Amino acid sequence: QVQLVESGGGLVQAGGSLRLSCAASGSSFRFDNMGWYRQAPGKQRELVAIKTSSGLTNYADSVKGRFTISRDNAKNTVFLQMNSLKPEDTAVYYCNAAIWRTGSDYWGQGTQVTVSS
Image 1 (cartoon, helix red, strand yellow):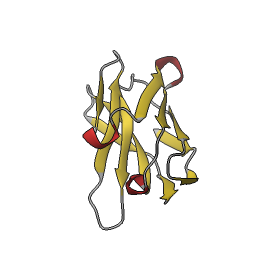
Image 2 (cartoon, helix red, strand yellow; image 1 turned 90 degrees about the vertical axis):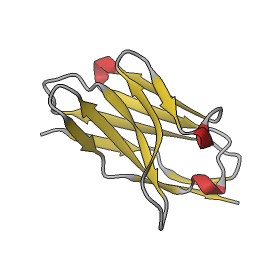
Image 3 (cartoon, one colour; image 1 turned 180 degrees about the horizontal axis):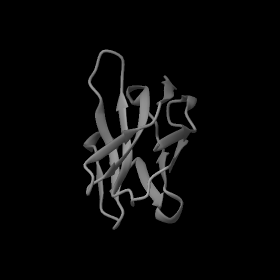
């Protein structure tokens, strides 16, 4: 049973920083993609940042230059350092991990990030 456990959300003022963590467990296979999505009230879930096991990254345009994704492949852990936070970054942030060979896609329970103006 694959589990993704997130931590690090919270309330921060605009301009502040938060660091999200996600630890994945329970898989016999390597997680190819690990990353973060977010969903604001009334909006669709959107990609924030993703990183492959080989180190390739992809960021949403709205977070480029402010957010940094990193991962520890040995520990199946992914992090999201969020700097210069804006009120529009307020959302529930979900950790995602994918295994290509099995076509499997896993999600964490979500962690709330609230940025006050």
